[in-house]
Amino acid sequence: MAKSLLMVMIVSVVMFYMNRPIFSHEIDPYSQEVPRDVAISPAMEYDMEISHHYSHKQLDFLEACADKPSTKCGNEVFKNMLDETTPITDACCRDILKMGKDCHLGLVQIIFATYEFKNFASKGIPKSKQTWNDCVRRVGNKIGAPDSFEQ
Image (cartoon, rainbow, N blue to C red; front, side, top):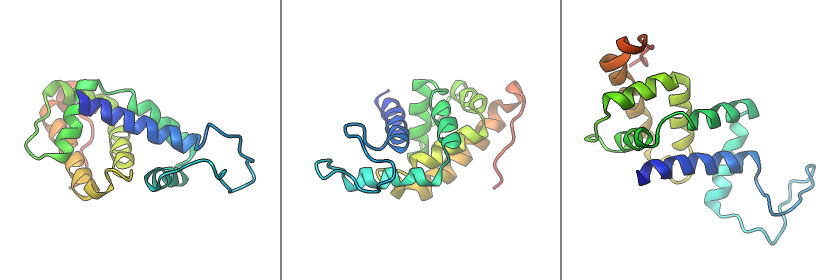
């Protein structure tokens, strides 16, 4: 449960900082300068830089996606992406598939783009696609057979 809360919190924080970098100060929108008394860690700076790769529409879409999986399933999926031995239940597979392929991959990509998890991306992203395909194989026919990721 703690990891799923962490995952939701991380996605929320990343989305929050991407949309609104600094809330404690009024910043001239035409200036690129940050007030001197604002301490931004290199990790926060790195995560805020991610926002330049996404449109507001994409960020809104991903924020809506982050609300879809249950806490329990978010925990299972996150553990599964980082650990080969953590299985995903059929109930969570249904949640993932109902969320949709674009939501699933979008959330996975933004999580593994963050400073904290970027070193796990080469393992986590392919594993998330493998998990999606496994869920399609196991429970896809029960909810309308979504598409698999190409191997």
